[in-house]
Length: 211
Image 1 (tube, rainbow, N blue to C red):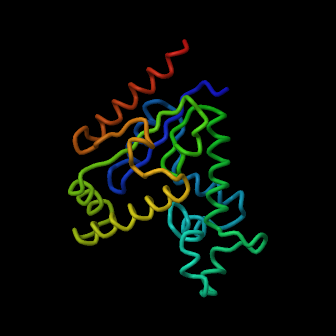
Image 2: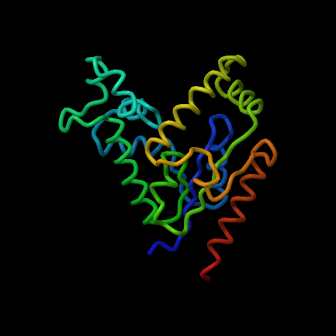
């Protein structure tokens, strides 16, 4: 039985979820798993990081196949030459197996990739969702990617839509809902540091329960 504590972080695009995870990882001295999960899955599947990234947390593959069934290029991209299964399904399944294996080995922080659902059988999971007001997210994305306001807002809308469809199609749960998460944090109110402070305190409390 897994006794160490795991943190999963769902996040709106531009809310600062990755930064929260990164700072929390440094404070707690435990591993952060985010984009590196893509590279791990790509390595095990023997595909390029680029191809794995294209289907990471997106609606490509299974969801859109009905709309793109006539596209030779699309089928060549999403389909394995071994099994004929969509690449997005194989990446998701391999990432899920990696997440479970890493969670069994020790404490860690998992960002996105339906980790809350994948680790649903583990009782020692803190499932957090990070969100922020739209205007704050727009400002953050403008600064991070050097975009104007409209392009930043469009990118947020597109990315959140992809994450929502990806999560809901995999889990059957509503993305960003309280029913799917143990707790939710508004970074616009708490700030990055305040959110990290709260999660650190919760983590340390959970770790001390059985001591």
